[in-house]
Image (tube, rainbow, N blue to C red):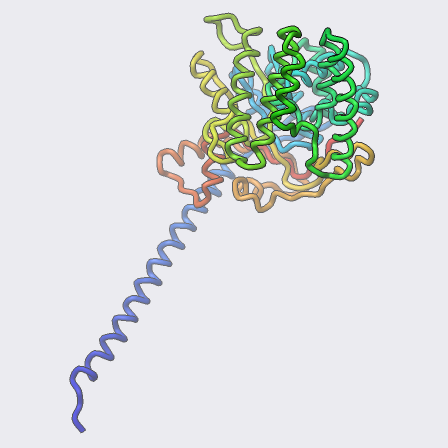
Length: 422
């Protein structure tokens, strides 16, 4: 039988080639696994090295974590607390921060009309239960007891609440009632008062049913008519209507372009902050000490975790830089427990939600180092940020990299409880 040299020689060569390729692939995978393990090891080592305990007892804080935080708070002109909303422990922590910082103004994630109400009601004894029953969620987050107690503490220290957000989704009825009280024309006053009552009922039903049928969603023609109605009223009234229109349009835009809506909202908050600052900062003077409390995504010193937007934290950083001052950016969140997750005004128990953040990619290394039943854990991210910038630390998660670049501290509460109603 005649043997084919080609067939006799190419088969073993092909087999060898495949074996060599498999070996190289296995070697490459092994190197990647080794590199990943080394990166994970470096990250874990740095997280643990710059981890500190913080103990909270009846609103009083102690431990090495609190000592470090106090030192940095005292050295900062602007302190930003970024939170996961609806956790009872966070406004208590923010009160403690305020006691150390002694701010001249407190900047809140509510609209300026709600802030005016908060300032007025915080000056009165007790909780504003009657107001809340008539206008459920009319104070936004400050419709919860722990948040309102924070506002009352600030009032005792003569620290005003500055609201810079758009008109709240759930406060159209309250807004129109205030608008009716300011107009001079009798027929316009009666119309606005009737609309306030109708909007209050509509929004209450939306809160009970959990539907997105809030009255702030207005047609352009309705907004045009509203502006025409107040065209001869005071500048204050006309500005209120312009603010309402801008807010309505932001909510409408969110239905078709969430990221554009978010950017428009942030731009509005930035303008409102600059305008509000005029009452507290004279030209050429340093910034007043300011305490911010917003959702965690808003206070990053760089790009935010939501859509790559440069948010309020970045603006605060730039303002501090312009005045050769320091801003401090804190992200505080629970590992697990309960939080407020709804607006039902009739049965608050339906608003309480169980949650866990164990697998949150942006915070997983910190969650992993926080054991149930232990003290709060404070993580100083600045050494990790330096290592990341200097290419001494690599992380596989873009969300984690954003956290390391955007915040100075992460604080993990092992278990939280939901905020309470009045």
